[in-house]
Length: 307
Image 1 (cartoon, rainbow, N blue to C red):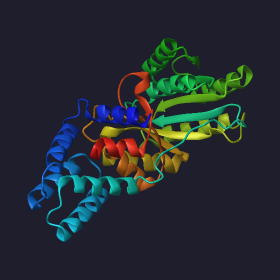
Image 2: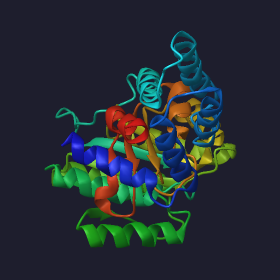
Image 3: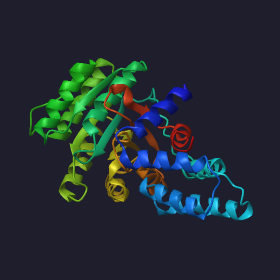
């Protein structure tokens, strides 16, 4: 199973990704040869381009340079092992493990994020994935501010045969969330996924709307929403860290979903986000198909990068 997951990560990270193609090509070439100062400089360039962040890149390079000082016969394969070890250490504890708590009726997941992050498609894909695992799932189309979002999630729900609660454009998003939980309770669903509006994290009144949604669902379950996952576009680089920080301060995030790792030049951004906030990464988006939403695996991610 890990082998197929590794291949999914590897294929996803390679796909339509100029910087990652450059990273894989450069790293693959470097790791087959004996190291010298010039190739270490090339590796540094590739790591920065992949957007692992300054701290992680310097940590990897620092350990490679220290090993090279002690052994001038160090080869690229040795550097790869060092890079993989450091990255695994940085991402220790990053894997989010999801399973519904049977005491929650239902388990409520609120997906949060700005427009364009892939939140609505993620909500539908996540619902489909959990259904494949035997969960009974209902979607709440709480992004009532964008007519396109409402149409999009309803189309996905019909295509994937997922139950959905929605309302007209401009309706109260908190009311849709409330109706979704009521429907879940009355129909015996054990997971409810709320697709919230794509709010700009710089807009205070929109963040207040998120807080309102939280207060409203707590009228039905004082512990809900049980999960508050930020859906982050992996191409945003360091901007995604600030975005996550603001949402975390406003809404108390419990985890992350990183999308678009198949088509971004900055697929290493999840490293910086986790390093800054220590929020677990539950899922990553590696393509357009429903099955391309995959549980995050540190091992598969590191193996895909460093082999």
